Image (cartoon, rainbow, N blue to C red; front, side):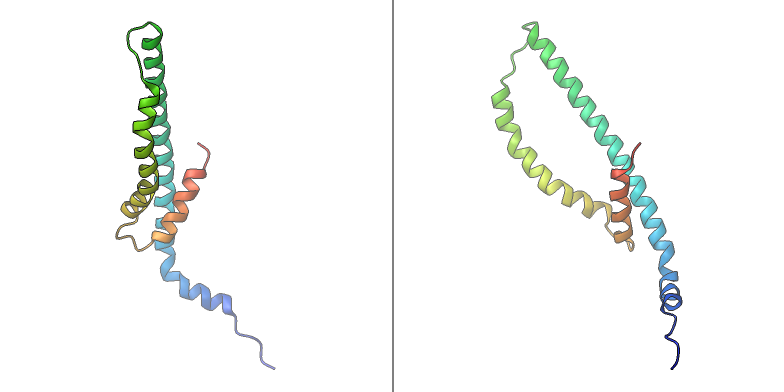
Length: 115
């Protein structure tokens, strides 16, 4: 009885040409994920500061904010933006990338990373 062929060596040999694309894709995806996370935090910080400023102005009777009207105007836009925005962003970020799978995996890791 002959020994089974060593499939790990042949698999490694088959994947070797793809490893640079996987590593570059994962690294760029991770960096993009971290950048998106930082930008998202900055946008949320700005939005929070804007809310505080509006509330202060409303408290001192300098402005009146119609919150129900603001909610009615923004909800459809935010809902549509959330659904279409993530698909659009992934399409833009992975356009013409031969390593889109590795990039996406790295992106998800970057978004989940602490820091």
